[in-house]
Image 1: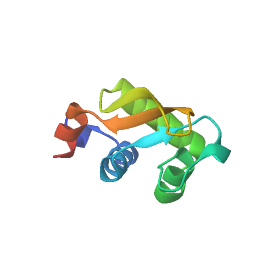
Image 2 (image 1 turned 90 degrees about the vertical axis):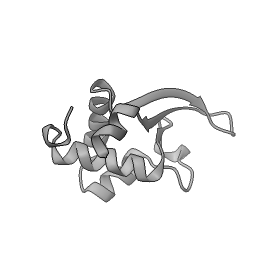
Image 3 (image 1 turned 90 degrees about the horizontal axis):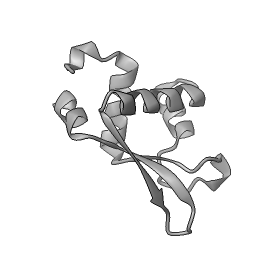
Image 4 (image 1 turned 30 degrees about the vertical axis):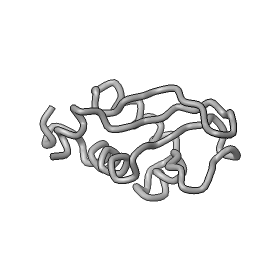
Length: 93
C-alpha cells in the first residue's frame, strides 16, 4: 500500500505510533500509566474522538500496517499493544 493511498488521519496515527514506539489499550482509562500512548492521548494529539482513535487503530491492523498483540504489563494488567508492522514502516519510508 503506497503512502498516497492512505488517508491523512490514518497516516498521522501510523506516524504517531511509530514515533512513540507503541500504543496500548488496557480497557479502561483509569488504568492508564504515564508515558503510555492510549486512545485519549491519540484523540487529543490528532484532534479526533477517542472512539475514532480506536476505530483507526483497528483499521490499521486490518490493513496490515499495525501489529496487535496481547501483552501483560508489570502490574499484571493485560493489555493490547499496537506496534508498526514492517509493511507500516515501508509505507512511512
